Length: 266
Image (cartoon, rainbow, N blue to C red; front, side):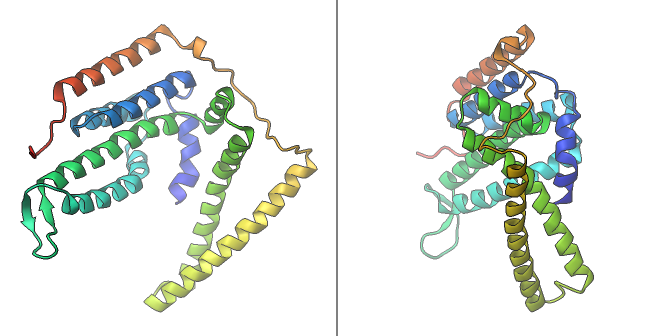
């Protein structure tokens, strides 16, 4: 938990792409996600993943270890989902479990690979935006595209307090560990229940404190924030050319590869 609390904001504000036009990044990411979902083969999402990873690691120069930590949790869930899909799919069975007709099927493997690769491509594309752009600039885009003010304000507050409560949770957890917590199953359950209840109470208290702090500063239902003034009109010709080349490459791959999968299921 500490790795995200201590370094996410640091890397978003201190990478080689921080000052690039936010609209260029947003357009690239939206197109990448849409193309990622439009394909029927796992190869295209893998191409998107490779491109986004190269941009993150070698262009933006985000550290490899941090990028792996960022990708680990969503890919862990995607892997578990893929395993279930592989056993619940249609088509000839490669390995039969011997009950209820459940087994590892060709269609299931195809579906699992497609879902996992789509998650890989989608998360890496979204990660490109998150890891290279300060959140205040992303929230400014919300304002420019006329997202309701209450939604933007809630997103700002949620983003701010996620890291605060991760720190609080980590501090409480370490405090319990130093007092011999989590050393047995029953003790583990007791400590976890205590941790959850205390974090809930602290969250409630912090909400009251935050509202009073905002009210004392003239809060009128809207959070005002500084904006850098990025505009889609300020995008350079180079950015447009790179985005167009990316779209042409992915569309060509979609057309050429079609629905290519590991197994051909009739």
